[in-house]
Every structure is written in C-alpha cells, then in structure tokens.
Length: 431
Image 1: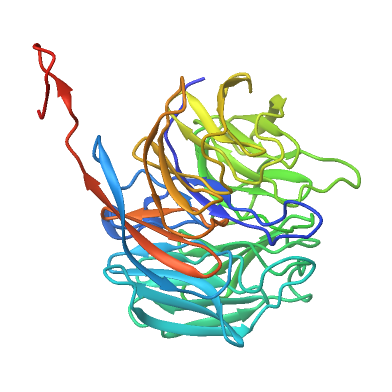
Image 2 (image 1 turned 180 degrees about the vertical axis):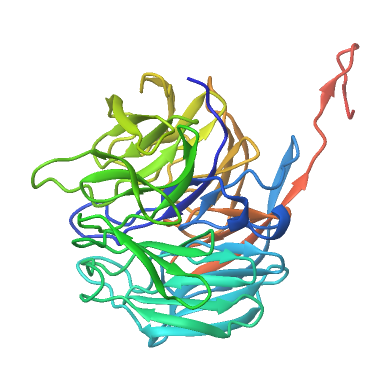
C-alpha cells in the first residue's frame, strides 16, 4: 500500500457523563481552495483542530508561549488565515463566532450566534463545531443550528440559515458537524430521510442538493480523491459513502454498522488514492475504493482495534498511521492494522501533524511535539501552556502553534536551536 501525506481536519462531539463523548476528529482533505488564496502557507483550519502540511518546522527547536488570553467555553478548534484566527465559544449569555489577532490575541470582531448552549449530563457549555475559511469568508455552525457566513475581515454577516427539525436531525448534544466549503458549496451533515448530507450555496446559503437517508450525529464530510475521482466522503451513523461534489450523486456506499448499532462519531481518514480508514468507537475499519466510472465499489480490507476507545482520529505520515488507542499513542501499519509501536509518554485527547511532527496538548496542559517516527516514540519539544488540556487540537501557521482549552487561547512560538555535534576529538562543538 502506497501512502500519501494528507491535509487533515477535525470535528467533535460533546462530552457525555456516561462515556468518552467529547471528541476531536481528524478529517483528511486535499482541496487547496479551502486553505486560502493561492496556497497561502499562513492558512490553517480544522474541524476542531487539524492536520496540515502547510508550513515547516526547523530540525531542532524550542517552544515558548508568545501570548495567552482568557476565552469562554467551547470545543471548537481554531482556523487561521493571514493575520486572523477564528473560533467559536460561549461569552456570558451568548454563543459567538470571533476573530483574534495572530500577533497578540487581541479580539478583532465577534458575531452572536444564539443564546448560550448550556451543557447537560456532564458536558460543558458552548459550541462544538469548528469554523472554516474559504477566501474572504468564514462559515460556522452554532450548536443550536445557526449556519452562518461572514466576512473574514470584519465579521459582517452575509447570510444565516436555521437548521432544525424541518430540514435536519437535531443531535442530542447540539449541532457539531463543521461546514465544509468546497467548489462554491458549503456541505453539512444534517441527517434524516433524504437529507443525511446537505449542500448550500456559498454566496447566499441557498440549498443546492440533499442526499442520503441515514441518521447523523457528530460527523463532518471531507474531500478526497479515491479511485481517481475527487469526491465528498461522508460517514453517517450506519454508512459511509462517496458523493459527486456538484450534485450529491452517490458514487459508492458501504454499511459500516448494521441493526440498532449506531456509530455516532465515525469519521474517515483518507490513506492513499484508493484506501480510506473509518474510525469507529470500538475499532477501525480500512476500506478500499475502486472504479473510476459512473459508480465505484468499496470493500473491507481489515478491521482492527488499533485505535479503539479513542475518539481522536489518526493521522497519516510516511508508511504509518498514528493515533491513540485509549490513552496510548500508537503507530500502526495501514496494510494490516497491526501495531508498530505504542507509548504512554504523552497522553492527550487531540493530535495534529505538521511537517512530519505530531503536536498535542497533553492532559496536564503541555504542548508536546513528537516525531512521526515509524519505529519509536521520539519527543522533540514541550512547554507548559495550560493547567490542563482539552479536546481542541493545535493549529499551526507562520511559526506559531495556536492552542485552546475551555478557558484560554494561546499562541506558542517555535524557536530554532542549533544542535550540538561531537568533534573528532570528542569535544562537543556548535556546528
């Protein structure tokens, strides 16, 4: 199996007091228009964090907090474009979408979405979905169903649509699907008979198409090229399917769960040009998608507990999949689903990939960067940022990591350091 590094995004699910409910789900995507104008390397966005091959890291570096500011509760990740970073959170009585300065964290603008979504049964208050940027527009979905488009520069509202029982299924812990901007559309997993997936016009919010009959809970669509066809990949509670972007026509489908079992947080991670990994609650499922005609076929390659009991989606680098099995960071062979190595050195509920390195905010609040090494756990750098970590994955742009939890937002600077090498005499010298 030949692997390709993929750009990845994430979404999440609200925490339940009964189970591991709050999640940050990595979603792979390979559409440059989502990342900004002409591949701007300062663009990062994610469905609650993300994995991006935009930007580079020095071979050796240290981490230092550049700024930190208070922020309201919410599970949204950060999207970055140029001098703006945007995220969703609760502020006083409201849920809001807001932009902050990359340089110093100063608030630039905010847009009220609705009254605060109050957490219940052990969950925290506030939004779950992550905002997305396409060109000069920001798209966001509030937990009470407000799908909005704003100007990136000043937050001016361009249009707003209310999702409710008339056009979607209302998830028990609020709307979580992150809006995916692609080819002039905004795609949202909405759920219901004939409307599992819905596409809206980016310009005015007009409904363009709907498809699918399954329920949807905490999933987000992605874009991938499989079997030679660029397509949407959507995973609902019982099914995975590939869709033609312009029309929603079904290219292939696969029932990943049957009967009353529901995979409320199932998401796909494209692995290469014909394989896609589905991360389910108790196991992972590798699919092979073939055919480039009017229809394609998906078949199961393997099922494994490689990433079981973790709702953080794996990332792909080199010849390995990396993710968490419970609290254990694991490297897995994508051909077989077998472990290459496992480590408890860094325990986290989030994971991002930048330039061959994995970044995570650990449960005790450290930003930790680790080599995506196929053979072993090898830590690069760490710094204490928060009192405790959370579910939002680190974002990265222009030499800065951007991290948040339920109370703060921070920027962490990457500072290159020279490596000490040994001279032939055995004395340590600087190169």
